[in-house]
Image 1 (tube, rainbow, N blue to C red):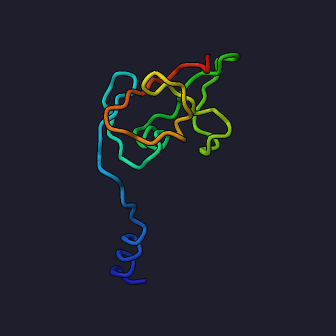
Image 2: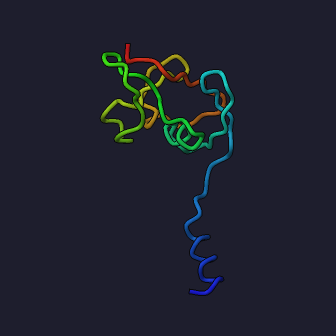
Amino acid sequence: MGARAIEDFLAALAVDRGAAVEVVVDGRPVEAYLGECVAAALYASGVRELRRSPTAGGARGMFCLMGVCQECVVRIDGRLVPACQEAVRAGMTIELGGSLA
């Protein structure tokens, strides 16, 4: 495969992202993209731990990414929601580290 073919192949894999927006995660600004789920935006920004288990205190993060397991529950604009089921909106406030209580 020649250099041009490799460039064409890589270009075909490129992802078209929505507009860049700012969200606030635990008080700090984070760049995210419209059309992405909050879980993807958090992962892309380096966040791996979303909360702690209310019983054992173990770290919890993204697991199924389809809204079934509830491992990625975070507080967004005051509501507890699975981060994988919530779309990024400009200016949203995301709080990590909570429990489901």
